[in-house]
Image (tube, rainbow, N blue to C red; front, top):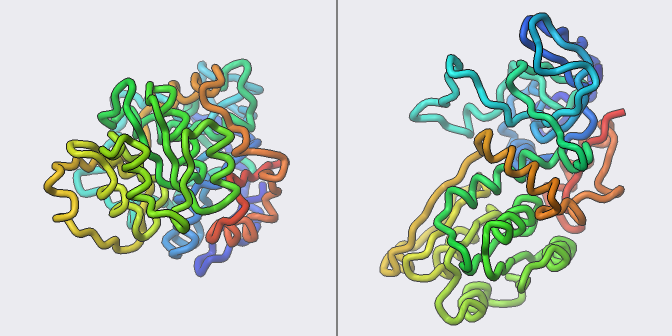
Length: 337
């Protein structure tokens, strides 16, 4: 099989690797679509991924081989590459001092920038009828936003701001709406992403390069500030912006992963007793909820994924370079085959 192997120094190489063979309790999945995650882009941008690794964790595919003892799956089943409930005997905790910078990119697991992946029987979940494999590849990032909204203190009728209209921000605004937000405002400087937020129903979209985003978000929320701000941008100043615009006793949800030092001045927001909550990854129930939101149309993958979003594995180097400085890109998806 072919795979995009990260070689270090912001370079991928397309290499031939041995096809995986399932052992007892395992299955092989032929990857159909693998979305390029912002975290992988950051790993590329800051050269954090270990050389020799094969990244790619947002994917869908078809079961092509099953190992001895596998009963849940058969050849031809459509699956999403994650979301399964681990067995009670499997330790899932990453430990009390888990550090994503050093431990979040496993070297010994070939992921979905390869044509095939090897999985344990419990790991994937089935794609329901009515959900395309292309849309299902976005289940993992959607689950991340489901987890963030469920972890937040957002209540029915609240006013929400989402900072950043990349894929995570666009999914987060839809999930927040589905969870009962009355108004959802978005801040995004890139025109294509801002237009996507408007098409997906944002009540207002603000360009922070042209407008004082803090003042404008406070004005839009009746002079009080949003109840909850989801920080989905990971730009240098966006966490500080979120803390400054949120209302008294409001909450800032840190969803995007920031890889550079971020300056904060606590006296500007401490007196408002603002709450800050980090959100990381997702849980199996979040994946199931995400798939159902996609199935019922409450979360739309249009205009995130279009024909222009799809690229062959051979173009992965150029795609990552473009996503380091996005302008017109929303979501890019590797299409195998």
